Image 1 (tube, rainbow, N blue to C red):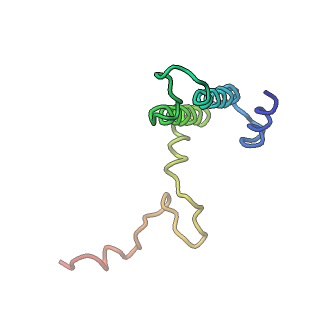
Image 2: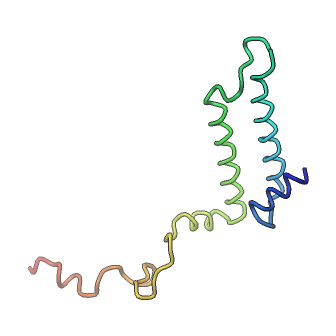
Length: 116
């Protein structure tokens, strides 16, 4: 377990969530055993777990939902949505701020009006 804990700490950082070690260890152990099933001479109904697409998709969905749930728990729903709805890069000093001013030029109505 020390190896897995250090591997997670190197990947995630110093603040490792408590649920991450059991999740990573159980998924890794499950994948290992599920892939070993192909090597053992077992009865015909037993197939390797990754032979069917449903299992990897379900595992991926579980990990995705757990990570997003943890992000909502840590940041709160508002911070979580703000993380996805903010600009992907900081605005340059010469550009306008979308939150403080209108994105249209001040003479926009004069230049674009039909002139009635």
